[in-house]
Image (tube, rainbow, N blue to C red; front, side, top):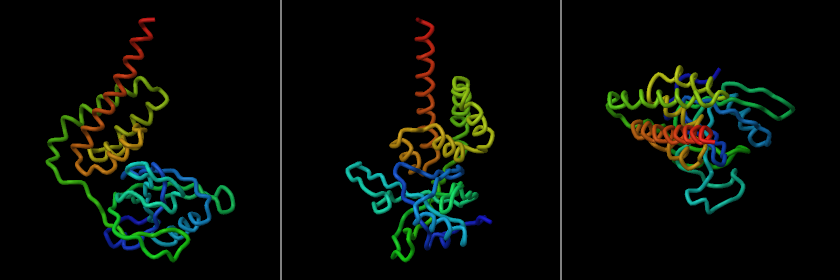
Length: 224
C-alpha cells in the first residue's frame, strides 16, 4: 500500500524521474508510460519500498541547454508523489498513476548506485497566510471556472469535478494549474509559487484571459 504519512525522513533518499516540462502538482494525479529499463527499475524499487518518487522538470531557466533529460540538471523544486496504480501493458512496460502529495526542495544528488538517479530533498510547504484573505477571490475563481466550463462541453465534467473536490484555495489552485494551464512557463511559475494568494491571483487572471478569448470568439461568430 502507498505510504500515508510523509516527513523529511522520507526524502533522505528518493528516486527522481527527470521529465522535460512536466510538473507533478500536489493533490493531482499524473499518468505516466514507463518503458525505459532504468525507469522500470525505478518503479519496481519504489513499489518494493514506500511507493514514493519525485518528478523533476529538466527544462533550464533560459532554455539554452538541451540533451538527454535523464542526464540534465533539473529545477530545484520537485513534485513528490506516491505510485497508486501500476498496470503492466507488456513485459517491462508499465502504465502508472502517481498521486502528488507535496513539493520538495532539492538538496543533493546521491551517488548513483541504482540504474536511476536518487536525491536528498526536503518538504517545501506553502507560506502561512491569513486564509480569510482568500475567500472572496476563491469565490470569483470558482465562478469563472463555471462560466468557462459552459463553453467547453468536452472538459466541463472534469472542471466541475475539480470545483467539487477542491475544498480550499490551496488545493483548487494546484488542480486548476495541472488541468487548464498549458503554457510551460506559467505552469512552472505556478508550481514554484509558495504563496497561495499569489497562486490564486495568477489563476484568476489566467482563467479570465481564457474566458475573454472564448467570449470574443463567440461575439465574432455572431457578427458574421
